[in-house]
Length: 268
Image (cartoon, rainbow, N blue to C red; front, top):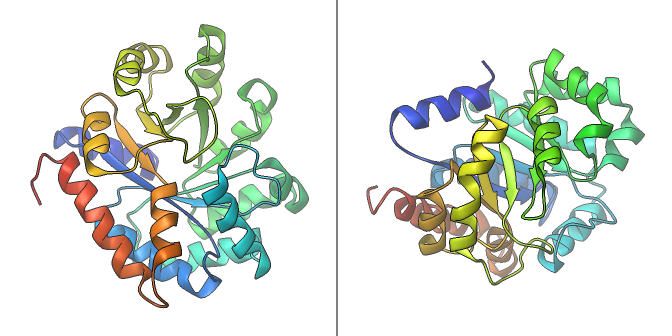
């Protein structure tokens, strides 16, 4: 059982849902990534999604695009990010870390080398936005062989065939994109999400996390009532952007604590 699968099993046994925050590695500068990762855990994160900056992030809205630009300005790449994960693991062996990004940096690194190095660093899962499941069965197999979970996206437009492909290739959890559009978009239709989740969960046989458009405790709590996990990214990046120098970890932890409390029904 992977660290991700063990986390969902533990939470299900406690009647709780996973909180999965996203930050971009290297943003606002590389020295802040580890303090921010630790702040996410302090704030109640169950799994961390660590974004791999890329110059053409087609699925990301302006907020996460800006985060990628700041990280890339410091030269943040996969080797640097894996070093960050190795350092994080020295003090935390329990919180799963998922790398989320695009195919180009992984292919430039070399797929077998990336898979081996990610496993050695302590990465638990990989979500490649522009790798459709039917085209990366070999990549998914290599990840699974090293104990990593290949994680895939589903959207409101995903049909039964796409779900079957994801069920076959993926593991760990499903990231359900609750909106048509890019990250940070508004107009989250919670009723539509609630209506969609049970069928997805039944067809893919994995926990379902919901992201895109979740910005506060109220929306997170409503998503947590029907999904297995809540994914929040753009709102955290905005908090980082607006924080005075050195204050981002404290403010991010406080933001997440409020969301965690709302998801848990007000319990600390």
